[in-house]
Amino acid sequence: MASGDGLVVRVRPPLGRLTVAQARRLARLALVHGTGVLELSSRANVQLRGIAPGRHAAVLRALAAVGLLDADAGRERRRNLVIDPLCRPQEAVHALGQALQQALDAADDLAGLPAKFGWSVEGAPGRLAGVSADIRLQRTATGWLVQPDGRNHALAVAEADQAVAAGLALARWFAGQAVLRRAQGLRPGRMAAVAAQLQPPPGLDWVETETPAHDEGPAPGAVPGVGWLLGAPLGRLPAVALARLLRALPEQAFLRVTPWRMLLVEDEEEDEDEDEDAEAGADLPRWWAAAGLDSAADWITHAHDPRLRVSACTGAPGCTQALGPTQTLALELAPQVPPGAHLHVTGCAKGCARQAPATVVLRAEGEDEGEGPVYSVVRQGRAGDRAQEQRTLASVRDNPGLLFSKE
Image (cartoon, rainbow, N blue to C red; front, side, top):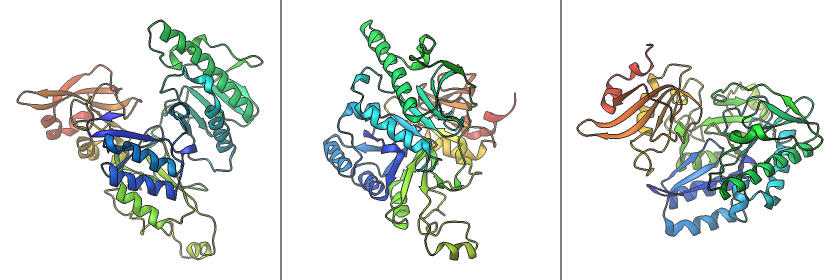
């Protein structure tokens, strides 16, 4: 995708996991061909920014060499899949995710799906509630629920292969609807807009489900039995910081890209030094200091870090659609955001960095002659919602506490 600072190249790690070699290649590509920063997206993808058009082919060849490029664009588009990062690799969630990925890879009859049609596979109710998905597959005590977005009903099945088949049946129905809408000169839309028309596949019935409340995702730190969650401020990770982390990890380690703009370093295999570490009372893994995780500028490692309370898109000048700067302002205001609140700074009404409501949204509206950048203020809403007031950048900086003061 073309942007204000060059091409943006999106990488979808298979099953959301990266080997050390793959992650090292991404860091190198960002340094050599891009801006030197990697972006962790809300759909568990990695983005390289600032790629010159003339270097695009070289970047693709490098990605293909480490298994990070699909055979064709159609397969890459269908593989828009987020797998619960907090499940162990040997759990049923990972196995179903792999089966679904293989099925999507072979499903040439889903070409009619819109580009952003997405899937999620989760191991606990609501864990991925904040992730945009047209079809959700959720592990239960007795099997799986397959739920289309926009309905409070799901299909209940006992086996993983049944869940994959049911999900594909729903996707094929929607692909047909999308083709019809295009033929009528309409946009294909998303599943939520037409889910009320869905009929269950033969042999299955709808069961009622509860709509999980949105949460901000897990806090950085240890995930027992799984690994360590490491946050990147605003989802932006300097390539040099990632490279330092990789040098400290064993070559056989895996990283998971999460939809919460964090990386998860999977737990290492038990080794002969584990008992020594336990006796020493070590709370952190051996590689922590060598990985540079004490550097607060590059990483978020504590639940109380105020930068977890802000989100921001690329903003101007990196995005051609943005009407004002965003990221520097979001980080500047982060200490003013009260615990439990969230500030979203967006360059336009699309709200690419956050689809969920926020306590306060600052939406750039362009320049006011003599006043500089102007921002609309939306309270308890989304980026495109009606604003309650407008404020200049100078007034926001002079009195940031007013954004969260009670009326």
